[in-house]
Image (cartoon, rainbow, N blue to C red; front, side, top):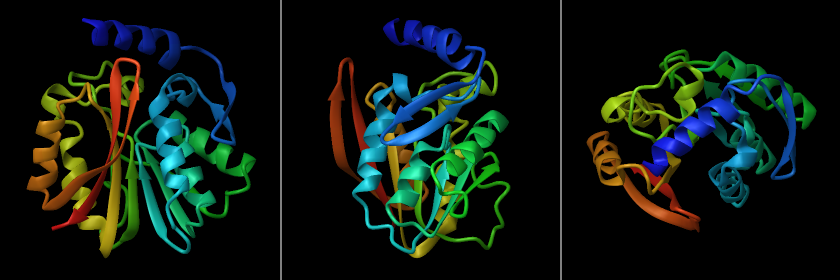
Length: 220
């Protein structure tokens, strides 16, 4: 009940809020267009960006899937990544990433792309690191804006993510994924295993009514 109420509030007050906003998050100046997930009002994006900032991504090729405002992509570029493909299904998110890459001086390393996961990326492309903060709430998304929150009935909208990511990782690549304890973690972990990943929890943080969980996924 509480989660449903938070979803309704988040959808109408934040995701559907008209107008373009400016924000400063994790040291980055962000432009956030309507329907784009606003990282100021959720702890997960800043927590994940902080974690990414501690990675050694020097010279790495990175994909940031479900990029939203592009915060994680920018964090990867700041951590030394040579190329970051910032992917989102929402065209407004892609436009926001383009603006944010320019504003923060990473336009030559962060490349926004409108895509449902890896569908618009060449099948031959491989990434050293894949980052994702996907929707984690069970249920059908009301529209493209709600895809930032809803993962489909039975999480069906995010299930292709794991198989696609498994095929796009370099041989010694790694994927990092952040989820909330409100999600059905056991079910999602089974999808990771089915995609032939070995997954382990490497960071957790308790925030009010939930625990944020960061997974490291490596090919089995």
